[in-house]
Length: 223
Length: 105
Image 1 (cartoon, helix red, strand yellow):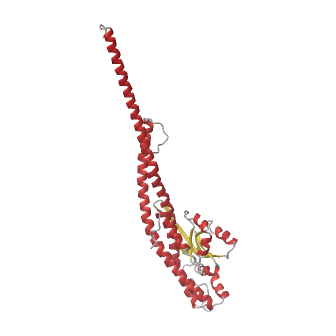
Image 2 (tube, helix red, strand yellow; image 1 turned 180 degrees about the vertical axis):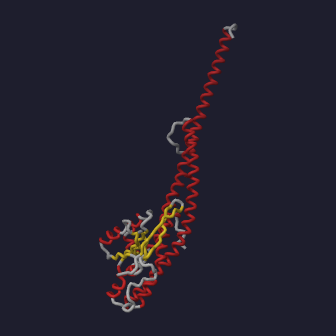
Image 3 (cartoon, chains in turn green, blue; image 1 turned 30 degrees about the horizontal axis):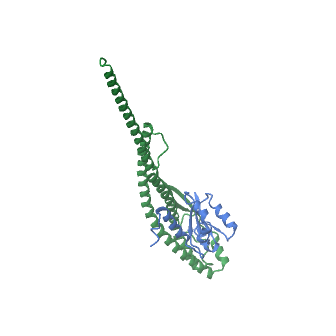
């Protein structure tokens, strides 16, 4: 039994009782937060998993096409075709709050208005494999962004869940029992004081009565 | 307004430049780490990194797990893929739930 190091007084008792109520309420709230975070996290991590598998597959396919393109084109002409891109992606982000976890929401804007305007080279000198690879890549971009968004969210949520779980456990297994024990200890001490005071009074009363009787025996006139 | 960076060996990431992402090719050396760290200063909102390099800089990447940005996302490269991306998800589930209940099927 672990008790806090406090004086066993009524004032401490009231203070501790108040703290216990707060701790119990906090514990309930944090537990709810943990459960809700966990529910959302599990949904999100499943989505994350499927999305990652899709993206990895997509990248592998696009990479395959790039390899095919580099097989039929010289390295120099391939580099020339790719090195000066027409597009540039700018990222706008807003912050969304999910159960006090801030997660980013990405929104991409391209330099040129037409998003399909991706071929930075003339078609005459390049192979068609390259066109395929580039168009696959550009189709993959929304998924890549979504993956970044979801993966960031799951990471931050995992951190927050861990923190919340620690807090819930600390309250449940350390703080609340400690408050309860201390309150019990103080109540018992106060009761004990009360009893010992009462016993002392009774003893004194007995002694006084006894003395009165003695006095009465010796001096029957005085009463 | 932030930008998107892709970090890895040149052969694996050259394709990303065609869709307007900024590529940072590097070969294995001390410079790689300096270059990678320079991407994390706030200019880039998302940093895609090939799995090979991601596992090299795992500690550095972990520091940013708790931050809003940048999002550091491992992607597979042409070669030397080690499953870092999916393993990271597993670790995250283990951290949040206590045991891996999603991937161990």
